[in-house]
Length: 209
Image 1 (cartoon, one colour):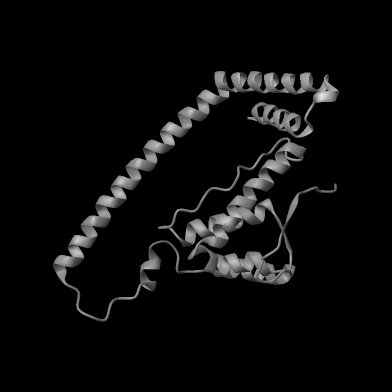
Image 2 (cartoon, one colour):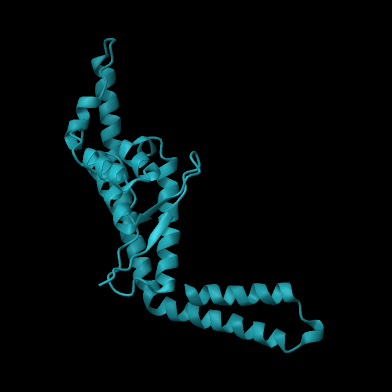
C-alpha cells in the first residue's frame, strides 16, 4: 500500500536552500551525536509517537520541539561543526545522502577514541597545577551530576502533580477566564476588543496547560 509520512522543511541560514527531513532522519542524527560526542550533553528529541501521529495537535507540538532542538544544535560551538550535522543540513541528493550516512556510521573516532584527537601541550606542565585542575574538575563534575539528578527528580515530581489535580485546577481557571470574556461580549457598547482578546487568550492558555 501507499505509505504516509511527515517531513519537515529545514532551511540553513548560511545556504538558504531547504532540505526535507523525516523524524527518522532527526533520530539518526541524534544517535550519531550521542555516539560521537560522549562527553557532551545532547538534548533529547521529542518522543516518537506510534499512534495518533498524524493528529494536528501532535504534529504542531513535535514541530515546535524540533525547532527548539535544531536551534540548540546550530548554536553549539562543537556539535554544529560535526560533519554529520552539516550533511544533515545541506545534502539534497538521495544518493549523496546514503554515502554521507555510511561515512558517518563508519567514523572510528567515536566513544573513547576521541582521546586520540586531543592535542598534548608542547610545553612542560607543572604536576601540582595539573593535579589541582583535575581535582577541581572532579569536584565540579560530581556537584553538577548530583544537582542535575536532584533537578530531574524535582521536575518529574512537579510534572506528575500537574498531570493530576493541578491540571484540573488550571482547566477550571481557564474556564473562568473564558467566562469573563464571554460576559464582556454581552456588553457591546463598552467592550474593549484588545482586553477581551487578552482575557480569552489567557483562558485558552490555562486550558491548554
